[in-house]
Amino acid sequence: MSEAKSHQQINELESLTEQEAFKLAEVLKQKLADQETPSSDQTSIERMVAGLGDQRGALRLTFAQSLGNVGEAAIPYLCDAMKNNPNVIIRRASAKTLNLIGSKKALPNLVEAFRTDSDPVVQGSSAGAMATIGEPAIDHLLQILVEPSCTAFQVGLINLALSFIGSKAPDAFDKATQSDNVEIRIAAITVLAEQIQSQTNKSAKNTLIKAFSDQASEVRAEAATMAGKTLEPEEACNHLCKMLKDESDQVRKNTSLALMKMEAKDAIGKIQDAIKAEKDEQVKSVMKVAVNVLKKS
Image (tube, rainbow, N blue to C red; front, side, top):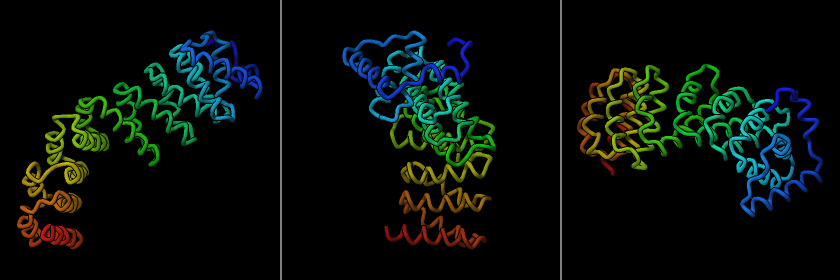
């Protein structure tokens, strides 16, 4: 895209009236129907990007699909609009259109928009586009995850994106499970649990069980919780029973709940022994509940 035009000039020159937007959308709709790629010259792309700001959802969809068909030639214009356009509708639609294209060329701009745009839809759409790009986005997402400025909302979006990537690239998180950062290891464990449920990663069970002995108690606690959701008693009961003596209160608590959820009846005796030795009253209460539920199951 030419740097000669300022963002304000582009906004002024390429804004469309309702009638102009309608006429352009009709032409583009016909091209879509005929499976023709729209013109990819600068003026044509800028007019389609301007059309993303139309209040009519059906027209915005036509412009987005048309830009998606243009493909990588539209990426610089969409990235510029996503980051700089004052119209939040255009920023949102630009991020969604980049999702349609799914090119890693847009990744740095998607990361920036996810970090800096305060609009939740822009954040969600940019996270979705990163998920579509897949494995190249993993390190970027994990890096944002551990930043102090990362909000709870962003954490949720990152976890969704990582889960989506994990379903398409099962082995992509092996490196993350060995990260020096505790939060990254926890995020990787969550993805592993989903891979176990979807049976997309043959080594996921073993990797999750290895996390039972992680040096960080937060990781061990999360691993116990995920095991309760995804593993069978015969796969993890013996390992979990050892964790009933863990130095961390939270790990012992999560382990008791995990054994309860997986209906590990063979663990009743081990939990009862742990109750006798348990000094934390809250953990002891959880253990007693686990025993009662297992006896009834």
